[in-house]
Length: 279
Image 1 (tube, rainbow, N blue to C red):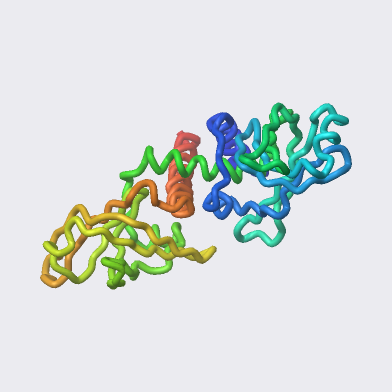
Image 2: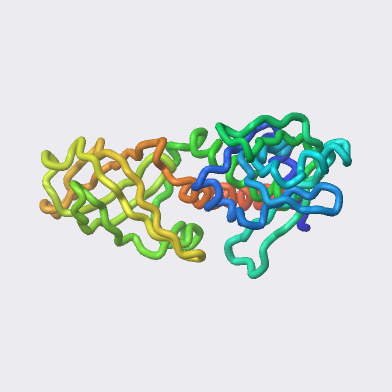
């Protein structure tokens, strides 16, 4: 493992170790969690389970109790291992590892008589793979608020770093697609250029499509036009500021922007360190 990655993982662990993440459908997608591969290992036996939430210190899982699981836990003094499995984008093989823990509590899950929710306290720091996978999501979420107004001009260099395929895109207004050109993007909005009349577009709800490559992804982000101006020399064209609805910005989009901005900060620090070393 490289020094920089090791440092990043340490920062993730210290900064986010107490934050509990619920595995919603979106979280499962962005982390690459393979839900069918999650198990509780108790003694030498495995029980399928569903991971409900996790932090770097604990997890909540749901499992069937009609299979002898509770009796098995009693025989191991409630010590278990949680088997986790993730498919990382761009990697051929899934990442699989165990996290050791002890069951602190168990309660019926909802109205079910067959399933319980188990609260696990990890007995060791989880593997670096888990910290890295979860940390990049948590870091993106934090920075999407801290740096929400940092605008990224879509020049060729930034497009290459972001793996944005083209500035040509589509914006959906009243569910009708309209061609547009992306000029910049941020966690909180985007500036676009399109044909139109300002008075008919201001305060309109819209959905912008932003396409990425490597891996290929398209995000549909809802927002509202809050700024508009005419494009000099092209009276049929308008420049519009689209403010995203914060609660509906996809996590995958946040991760893309955060990793690009983080790499820029790392490049700057590296260049600064190099200059200092020369003095």
